[in-house]
Amino acid sequence: MPADYDSFLLAQGLRTNKSDIWHIYIFRSGATMSLHARSCVSGVFGRRIPILVSIRSGLRLRQQHHQQYIRHTWKRHNSSSHIPLSSHEDITRQHQIRSSLESIIYESSNKPLPEISLNDLLKFNTATKHNKELMILQNANETVMDMLTLIATRLKVFRQLPYIVVLNPNIAEIYDAYLETLKVLLEFVASVQGDDSKLQLDSFKLSSLEQNERLIGVLQKSIDIHTDNLTVLSKGFEEIAPLNLFNGAEFLDNHLKERIMMRLVANHHMSLSAQLAPLSNSDIDSGALRSIGVVDKKLDVMQVIRESIDFVNGMCLLKYDERVKVQVETFIIKSDGTTTFTKYEPQLNVDGIDAEVFFPFIPSHLEYVLNEVFKNSARALIESQSLAPIQITLVAKDYQNLKENEHLDTVLEIRISDKGGGIPPEAMERLFEYSFTTFDSEEAGDSYKTLNNIGGNGAVNIIAGMGYGLPLSRIYVELFGGDLDVQTIYGHGTDVYIRLRGPDASLLK
Image (tube, one colour):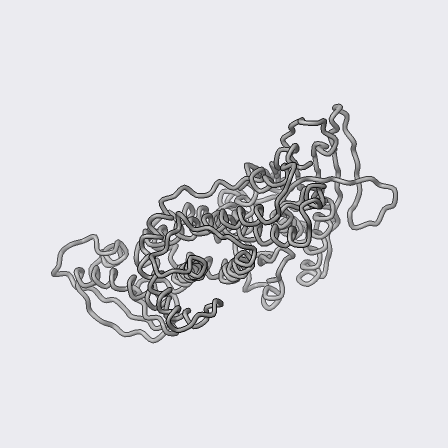
C-alpha cells in the first residue's frame, strides 16, 4: 500500500496519475449504497465488498453518486408526502421539483443569508393599525424565502466538503435531512403555484390563511426532520476529525448557527400564527399580545433561572444523589440612575422579596444557555466536594417606564460563579472546541444514559459528555450580538460572563 494512499483518496482524486489503482469499499446501510475509504472505517458500517477503481473512475463515481443520491431521496420520501396528490398531479409536481432542483439550490444559496434580529422579529408590534391576515401572510412569505435560502446554503456547503466526508453515514444522514426538508418545502410551493410550469420562486406568494395553515404543517415537519440529530452530527465529525481534511470548527460554527436560524424562523412564524388566530384586529391594536412569535416582551428571567436550577438539580440527584445551592443577586438600574439591589436563594420561597427581573428575549435560547452553564458549575462543585453555592449576579436596565419615543438598547448581564476548583490550563485552551469534554461516559456507566434528557426548549440537554454544550451556548448568545466569556482560577473556581442584547425598548410598547 503506497504511503500517500490516504492523502490521495481523501483529497478526492487530486493526483492524476491514471495508472494508480486504489482500494475502495462499498457499504450498504439500509437502502443506500455509499463508498467509504478503508482508512475511514472506525466500526462495522455494514457488509463490505472490496473493489478496484481507477482515479478517473472514482471521479465519475463521485458525480454519479450525487445524482443517484438525489433521485433516491425523492423516491424514498415520495410516498410519505403530507400533501394528498392524485397520480397525475404527483408526477407533474415531482417533475417540476426535479427539473428545478439544481437551479433552486444554486440561486437560493447565492442569496445573502437572512439577517434575523430581535428588532425584526418584533416589527409588527409597533404598527398603530393591524390587519391580522396581511401580517400573517407577509410573515409567511418571508419565512418561505428565508427557509429556502438557509436550506440551499447548507446543501451547497455540504457539496463543497471533501467527497469522502459526505460519504460518512452520519454526515450523509444530515445531508439527507436537508434534501428531504427542501423536498417538503418545494412540494408545498408547487401545490400553491398550482400549474404545470417550472417553479417560480421570485413571484411566489401565499394568498390565503388556508395556505398558511398548510405552511404551518410543512414547517413543523421540517423541524421534526432535524430534531435531535445533533448526536448524529457529533458522531460523524468525531469519525472524520482525525483525517484533518478541512476546518471542522468553522464548518460547525456556521452549520449550527444556520440550524438555529432555520428553527427560529419556522418556530417564530408558527407561534405568531397561533397567537394572532384567536384575536381581532382591535385586540391586536390594544396590545393584547404578551409575546410576538418566539419573543417574550417581558420574559421573567428569575422564573427561567428557577426552572433551570430545578432541571439541573434533578439531573444531579440522578447521578450524584446530591443537589447544589444557588444564590442570586439582582441589580436593576432605573431610568433616573438609581439602582435596586436584591439578594436571595431561588430554591426558597421567601415572602416579601421583590426580585423581579424582566428582559425581552427568546425563552428557549436563555434556557439552553443557563442549563449548560449550570450543569458545568454543579458538576464542578459536587465532584470537588465544595459546599459553596453557585452565585448568580444579574444586572439589567428598567425598560418598562420609558417616555414616549424614547429609545433604549436593552441589555442583560449575567455572571455565574462557582468555587468548584477551576478549570485545568490544558482544558481551558480547548474549552470551546467541539466534541471536547472532560466527562468520561464509560466511567459513568448506565447513569450517563439517564442524564440524556429533553429540556423544556425541545433540545437535548446532556449533563456532560457530548462536548457541544459551551460552543453551542456561545452561538446562541452571539446570534443577536451578545457575548459569552469564561474566566477561571485553577484550584479555586470559575466565572462565566453572559451579555445578552435585546431589542430596542421602543418596539415593546
